[in-house]
Length: 116
Ligand code: HEC
Image (tube, rainbow, N blue to C red; front, side):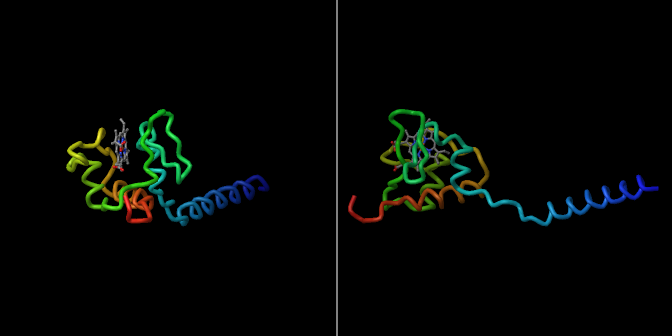
């Protein structure tokens, strides 16, 4: 009898834990994580966010040009736009939603002063 009670308690605890786990909203994936997960770090550092690429001459994305817009960057990363006549090396493989979020994060590194 005692074992049965313990067993019931155990089952109840498991159910309660499940309910708890599902009540936590899905963690919001940050633009930074999307950037790292998509291996952008193979060729880029973002020193402002303490991301250092293993590549020696990696382009630092900490100071993006002021003229870049979210719309343009989104297209550039899908190879639909070019900078100085050159398309980006890789096409973004993730979802549109991830791309937008990552671009939003990247744009926080725009040069603050207008002078280029
Ligand atoms: C194979 C190497 C490589 C990978 C991987 C790569 N890039 Fe690039 N990226 C480049 C090169 C080369 C340039 C253009 C030259 C430069 O800015 O030094 C560039 C330029 C850029 C620029 C424009 C920078 C500017 O100021 O004009 C952005 C933004 C950018 N990449 C974002 C990304 C993102 C986001 C990822 C991950 C999805 C990524 N890159 C992955 C090589 C790469």
